[in-house]
Image (cartoon, rainbow, N blue to C red; front, side, top):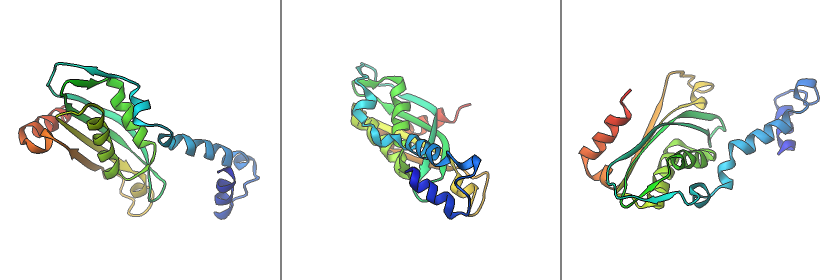
Length: 181
């Protein structure tokens, strides 16, 4: 990977041997591996057995989970927050596991629409919830730094499954709770 980063730097007209760039291919390769380390993880590893029996059927929400990913079209970051809600059916997830699921899928080359679906599917798969709701709000540097160069645009995607899709009151409760300040 270092060799390819070196070629990219040279292709834009830079001298890869100048002092400031001498170690850049190595650093860039290390950073790119880190930014895409979600490929090295599985849902079972991320959950690490933190699924607990619970006799609650009340809504569980974790909001404002920081999110960093790379757009698969331009390899530029999109940055935002993810809100996850679910209605348990005998099982709940350890709190940090929702953030770990977001990180695992976020650390892969993605489009936001796909990322939203992957997170919802993972939660549903893990605990067989009565329903899962995921909303992601993110700013895309591919739209901010290049192309139309719009600095204040935010993309919002949502996936609703089960009772969140079927019952407007359940969906509304979730959306109202994540929009509280």
